[in-house]
Image (cartoon, rainbow, N blue to C red; front, side, top):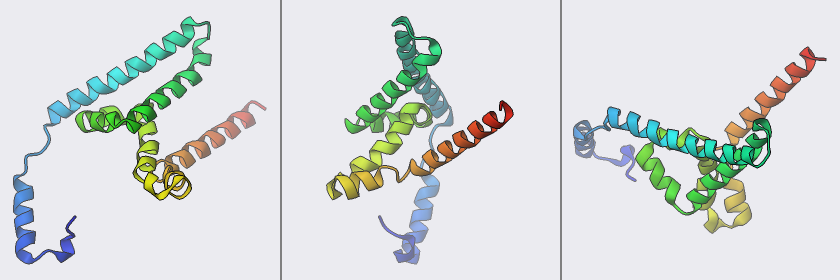
Amino acid sequence: MILMAKLTREQKAYKQWADSRKPGPSLGRNIVVAYIVGGLICTLGQGVLNYFVSQGMSPKEAGGPTAAVMILLGALLTGLGIYDRLGKFAGAGSFVPITGFANSIVAPALEYKREGYVLGVGARMFQIAGPVLVYGMSTAWLVGLVHWLIHK
């Protein structure tokens, strides 16, 4: 990667010229593909939920196992390199569902596995998703506290 600070004036001018002529993404295509892929992932999740309900669970009880299966699928497909290709094709359609969250945790871990399991995988796993986890847990705790205070 070439840093802008190390580029000569002519190289900067050429880069600006080339960037201005680079075709942008087709907004219509991106919206349609993201909608379809995101919908298919959610449909798969609904199918998993329906399976657990058909095995005798209530829809409320089936939510946890369904989330676990979808996270497992997202992590597995990331490990196999499939989810990254899906992300390049579908954009936000693959990132928004729960499988995208699994991808955001597993991808950094895989990138640093050469550094070892503790300092590489363990330390880098929550590099991207860590703030999301902290926010989610803090919000859940706060909502639980408010609910407990109201219904006390």
